[in-house]
Image 1 (cartoon, rainbow, N blue to C red):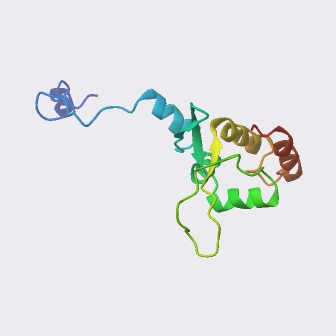
Image 2: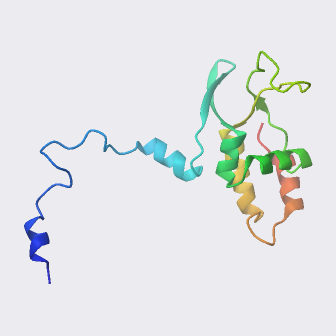
Image 3: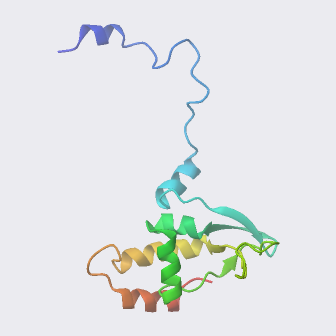
Length: 144
């Protein structure tokens, strides 16, 4: 049984007035695909050897892997993943006194996709994770 009040309002738009609101646009398809595929991580574009490439910072890599940046740094330090191939330019001044500044770690789109696949492949989200297999696989197959 239909509600007579709802039937009476059935032809009305979901906004007041005659013009639709300007700020209710939909997200572009490309941005939505990136958000869904990489869990909200957004790549940044840098020019490498005159060619534009997309890179992810360590924070965005961590988002894509559903981890925290400190975990990704730990994996790198312990040899589970190779050191970052790319870095941003060094800052002009020292950031932390007594510590050399190297620039931020950057990971290419191929590296992020590879690590996402490897995490799923070796079950790092389960209790039966194969950490040794993960380490061996990433050290031999990690894209440059």
